[in-house]
Image (cartoon, helix red, strand yellow):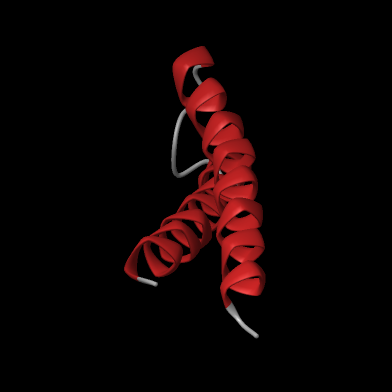
Length: 63
């Protein structure tokens, strides 16, 4: 159960960072560089994958 919660929390944090980083780049608080764009899109994708894996484990463990 702890591993499932870790996946869900980590996925949520990565998804939020994948939304917040591009927003900060659009409003010109962060300079949009290639590594930052790559990190923000990668964190969004990885967060979605971890969240889905956590949800799949959570539904599998529940009766």
